[in-house]
Length: 377
Image 1 (cartoon, rainbow, N blue to C red):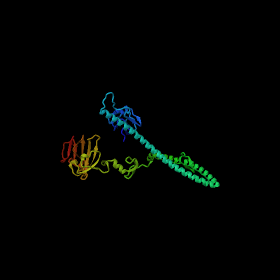
Image 2 (image 1 turned 60 degrees about the vertical axis):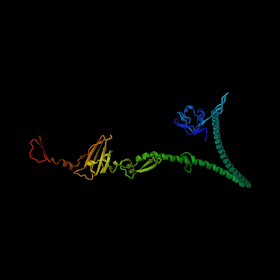
Image 3 (image 1 turned 90 degrees about the vertical axis):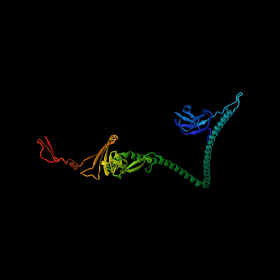
Image 4 (image 1 turned 90 degrees about the horizontal axis):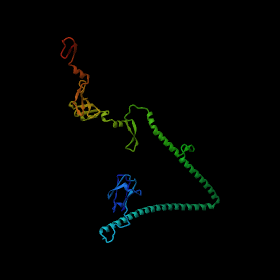
């Protein structure tokens, strides 16, 4: 662990830098980033253990470091001055700080030497390996030279073969280069092309697929009513944007709330049926006329909060003679009373049954029976 400095990661204005070491004076503390001294107007002291980064503080890893003056003691005897403990302690402290800073410098230098030594060691190992290979090649060459000298004819033949093979190797190297990097649409041999050519074609093909996707979808056969099992592609945001699929049934379940689905939404209190949709409840609170039976109804909600209409009928006990239909409204957040609706012809006939006959005449009323109406004009 260093005694006189502390390294820190990249900072920005508003960040702080910890000063973990003691010092005689703040003037002995400096800040560097990338080995370059940071101007004093780019940082300021919060307290003796903390520095604040100001506007313009440079980016990059840095170091806060103490450099104690070593040209003089902290205190000196002059004339008839008396040597006291504070003066001795300050001199000891300054000497300690200077020794710590020298130790840190030596530690850094030793780390650099160790790294350099490792590099030299690695280089020597590589050199030794190469030298061993060279020596083996040399020994092989000497052996081959001895074999060649045994027969001039054989040596001459081998020399010719070697020359031919060298030419073949050079030609193979050139051909290999062509197979790898010949320009697009440039034939290498036998109507075949380079790897670069096929890579370019693959990229162009992919771009064609991506760019043509919209037109393919637009040109596909239309299906007016999707089935629940129909599938749709999607890019999964929770799975690194990988390709996934989902069904029309899943889309409907995610997009349409229950109150707008195939079956009405169950409730336990009609005061809670507030949004547009269809609802049902058996024995739900605040039902029409306090009826404990099953009720089915719809809600029409206004855009403003607190304004809506509920229309509900008791569908298990209704009939043409009594449709059991009730309605109420919420006005500015307050529910009104349920009132009954008469929707069937039977209900209307029963309502007006007492009025069996209507007569309009200039004559005075005469004849008729109870329930008839006579209008004299």
